Image 1 (cartoon, one colour):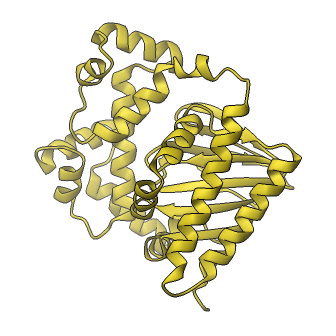
Image 2 (cartoon, helix red, strand yellow; image 1 turned 90 degrees about the vertical axis):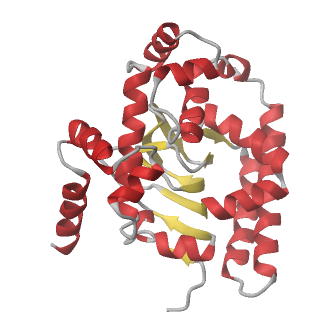
Length: 296
């Protein structure tokens, strides 16, 4: 089958498409009628812009419940924690899936709109579109569909310009909204999540993150527990475990020592002790179980 960059996920989920996404940079997942249902959270390695055409989906995004309804759009950056739980029988959506490397390239070209839009969606994962906005976004998705199917030197340029157009539209509409944006920006959790994504390989200490926000560790942990029900330390450990699981699952080319290095552990044995305490299996046993499950 010709590699056009357009896919139907009725029989394939994103973690099975990793090689294609990394190779193509951007792929269009066309009219998926289901989501990857997981009892466990996972860390998305990709940027995903999703447009819901009909029905609904329920999920958790960075520990917060989210409902995704018809004519909603969402923008998710790599590194955030997701748990998909349910979809309606009439659920239909399109996805623009972008590798982290490709997203960074586009962000450098169009930094201001990307940062403004992504900050909003970190706070509020879904935005409802009115009829005219939905029509314009559908037009942008059709143009992206064309760009993803292209080959040759103009493919990258067309993808970048189309993505930029979509970000400009979302930024403009966000500024017109009279919602509780100011109240949301005072929430500590979204800022904490972004800090973990940026610094998890440097430190797993609560004090390190508290200092980033000029707060005492005790008060910082209290604020996080008030917003999430889990302490700051629990959330940091949870994120490290999910990162370890993601690397063990997706990057079989990496040794356990290399994964330990990426996660900021000084030695493989330190990662193994931490992982076994949290998961009940060593990293190598976890990876072996995955291999056995895939073969069965």
